[in-house]
Length: 314
Image (cartoon, rainbow, N blue to C red; front, side):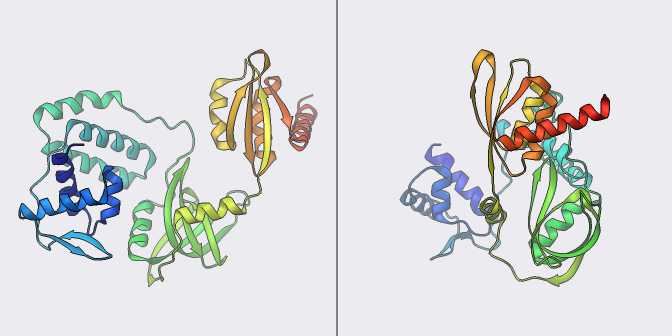
């Protein structure tokens, strides 16, 4: 990125955020902190009212606004792709808001770029083969995001996945994430601990007026703690050359770590699993094209599953 483009990008960052930090800008654009300070001085000399506060960061003076910024064709294409993802992976109200935002984007594009997006749109699609179903509560994502922004307690009725038990919880959200389904991570007052709730299992959701005190915990710290608490077992499975390739693509959901070629065209895959039983059910899909090399417990689990299948279908 040349200096002119970087200074324009800095100006956009100053308008897009309440406060920006010099070290963050230096890391974002791959330059030294001294270079960022020099660029900010250039903006000030050009008449842009940049305000700086030691230990806090930089911001624009209240009331200063830039004229609308034109999107490049590449940026508009990236947003089109994001809109396709939102349409498939978010709930219906969020998808509708994304479509409305995309319409506004098209309205400010040059005619040639609008035509370009129109021609490109049918050739970009997002396929969701399983999982990721909609939340049981309409507009659940929007309400939870409002709770996160305002630090407001949520009251939810939740149905457990395995037992089907219905419970009422009051929770303090710390974040949303997507992994086959949308999940809410929150401090559960009933369990007095952090819990992971799938949005499609929340049958009722209410945003309470009560505000909770912000916690230092984030999604990142939650996942680090979960990883530290997790006792993992190493498993190595050899898949034959005729193993079903579509099923093999699911390896990432079972703790896949790495793989290496085995004898006669086979592939040895290493997994780190919490419950070998979960891996056993998946490995069983491959029948005689999968051989457990370790541990013995996984081998025995497969023997027991095969015995029960034989007993059932003999």
